Length: 260
Ligand SMILES: NC(=O)c1ccc[n+]([C@@H]2O[C@H](COP(=O)([O-])OP(=O)(O)OC[C@H]3O[C@@H](n4cnc5c(N)ncnc54)[C@H](O)[C@@H]3O)[C@@H](O)[C@H]2O)c1
Image 1 (cartoon, protein in one colour):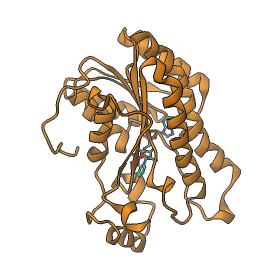
Image 2 (image 1 turned 90 degrees about the vertical axis):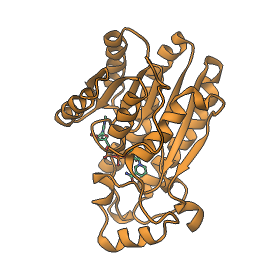
Image 3 (image 1 turned 180 degrees about the vertical axis):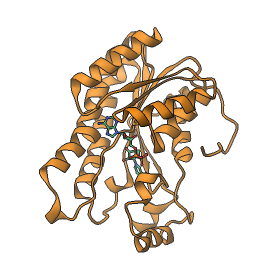
Image 4 (image 1 turned 135 degrees about the horizontal axis):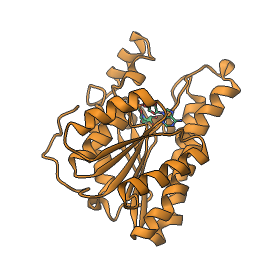
């Protein structure tokens, strides 16, 4: 876990928080941070074994944490999971983080229907299903906060990322449209736009030369850490950001301002 840069407040005290894709990487760091902020954490992931390990680890901090195996790409799986969360915690969900992803980076000629379908099912349509499932619960509790994970791929062109870029640009459009539609109910919807974050999934897929080239293009001179995205998520999930609506916060060490 990344040590927080400043002492952690208890901004999510008692709030039921759902984090999708929480079994590893950025999602796990967000669940960890939200637990430290006093949240009651529902970790949702498709990988049951990894999820169990993550939930055990999170419980060691003394936080209230439950795991839910669900596929965010399937509407009925999402609906069932959100019903179970409200039933188990005895309270409606106040915070949702749409973090789960399934990604393939392919040259245009190799892009296949199955990969694009899965990518969009999980990383784009999945956000519609989770938002649809959580909105009635947030309305009943008088408001809530939704945080969507986009990517700098939505803002800058990288090779072999046509489908990924389309998906992550879609997340930004979906964020703005949901923010407008849900504003009357006190529900805020914002996006985080991370650059390169050192998770097992991100760094492993690039060769040494690509990693070196990207590092040299980072004004801050390093990749981000999952905990540095988690602290932005905690801000957007809490009332500290209560006037922030439909926004995107870029957390990329200056990568895009230097290359655009
Ligand atoms: N790591 C980076 O450098 C980076 C950069 C920009 C944006 N992001 C975004 O941040 C988020 C997290 O990235 P990461 O690197 O931690 O990813 P990751 O691949 O390490 O973790 C993704 C998690 O989502 C889960 N998942 C996959 N399909 C699912 C499904 N159908 N239903 C539920 N869960 C599912 C996986 O089991 C896994 O635990 C993603 O949205 C990603 O696009 C990451």
